[in-house]
Image (cartoon, rainbow, N blue to C red; front, side, top):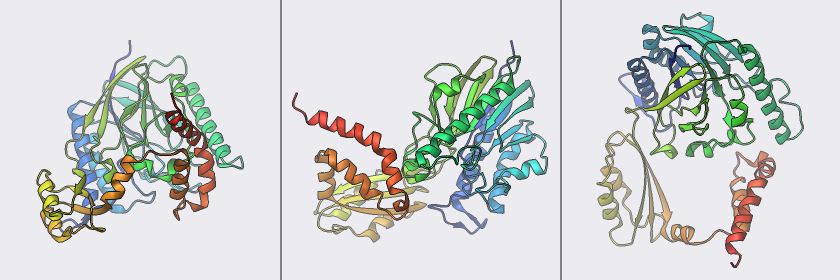
Amino acid sequence: MSVSLRVMHFADTHFGVENYGKLDLATGMNSRLQDLKRSLSRAVELAIKHQADCAVFAGDAFHLQAPRPTEQREFADALRPLLDARIPIVLAAGNHDMPSAKGRAASVDIYRTLRVPGVTVADTPAVHTVECRRGHLKVAAVPFLVPSMGDAERGRTPQQRQYAASAVYRKTLEELALTVGSQNVCPVVLVGHFLVEGATLSPWQHGASTHFLEPTISVSDLQRGPWDYVALGHLHRYQVLSAGSQPPIVYCGSIDRIDIAEAGEARGFVMADVGKGRATHEFVEIDVCRPMLDIFLEVGSEKPTGTVIEALRGYNVEGAIVRLTVACEGGRRGGVDEGQVRAVMKAAQDVSLVYQSLASTREAVTTAAQPADVRAQLEGYLNRPDFRGRKQSLLRAAEPLLQQVTAELDDKESPS
């Protein structure tokens, strides 16, 4: 029986995100970069404490494909303790890391160019044999495959391109499985940065147009290979797709929250014990993430400012990123003194105030959706400037879901 190796599975660090940040005068860095580095450093610290044998990164080191030197430095500095502890690292490239044009470098290519000992860069599909302290680990890598790869561009409609791109991923998995071979005796980890059918996007990613018509792989596609553990990146929410069967198919999630829409969601990484033909894993939550608070308050016409201030006393906003939505009567702000409200939250890192009409809020809750409303609402949303060029293709892609929703609404309205 082969030895079981402990693998740190992490992903989606997104160094370079600066929303809600501010300049730290002491360091000259954006405070959000400091947040992300603190979370990654804590993950590395915990992985070393858990005696990891290998660290497998499932993509999206940086938020932009051409990261700034400071972001590259801070990312490398956060990973350095792994190498000091003689824990090898495999860096798979995600969609944010990959170049848009053939021949250009991925954002993590510099580690391979410098031949940094202990670091394996996986920006093309390949099987890597990693020498760990307690044995060898095979890592089959499927980085994000750019749309221009292989047959993915063939086909004249977005759906055809999606189908062709998905076929490229399936073919890549089959080729990697053959490369591993039936005689392999090492534990095998498949690391990938792609979308799996049935997986759940984080609330922030639901609003990202990049996930429409993206290539997808099924759970059964991943269960057919010689993989003992499937380490996925791309989706920011931790989730297990294998329903208790082997191999575990796991999205580890991001190491920190990227957007206020992710407020309340845990962030961290996964520690997996991987042996030949078996694997177990546990989610390790990062306990140093900057808090995000998404607060919704309803106020009437009597003393609205006092009502808001009193309600805020129940929240610890120190150092937090806060979105406060106030549903009020009597006009857009309903007599709320924004200056006083902001003064109460002066200890927060960042505060966004949003106002809603209390009447429209109640109407939205009490009015049942009609079948025609669903389609109209989607069409209205796609009239945004950033979607107009693709409105029709997105509507076609959404048509099966629209039909399902319409049928469900019709069923509810039908007399029993």
